Length: 160
Image (tube, one colour):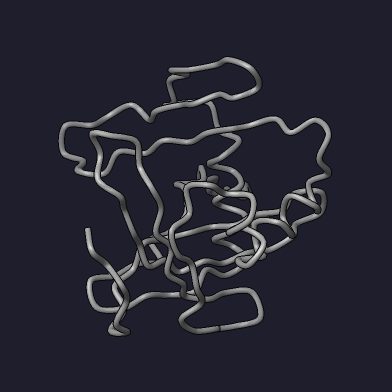
C-alpha cells in the first residue's frame, strides 16, 4: 500500500489584520515571517550598497499591496543589542534624530503591544505617524520584530 504525503510551500505570514479585528501573531506567524524574509523567489534586488540591500516583491496586477524588504548589516553590533535598543522607546528619542514622538498605548501580551510613532520626513514629504501592533520573539540566533499598522480608538497627536 502506497502512502502519499501532501507537501505545501509556505505562503508567507497569514494575515493577522482583518477588517474588524487584529490578531497577535503566533509562533507559526513568526516562522512564516522568517521564511519570507529569507526567501529569494519572487523578489527583485533593487538596491545593494554599503551593507544595505532592498528587495521589492514582483507586483501582480490584482494586488494592491506592494511588499518591500530590507537588510542592513551591523557588523559591530550584536543582534541582541540591536533588538534591545529597538525596544527602548526613551533611548530611541536620543539616537533617532527623526523621531518626533513615540509612546506605548497598550500591552497585549508579554511579546506584543500597540504603540504610536511619528517621525520627520525629508522635504517634499510631510511628516508621518502610525499606530502599530508590534510583536517580537527571539528565535534561536534570530531576533524578530513584526509591525503592522492598525487602527485604534485611543486619541493620538496626529497633525499630518
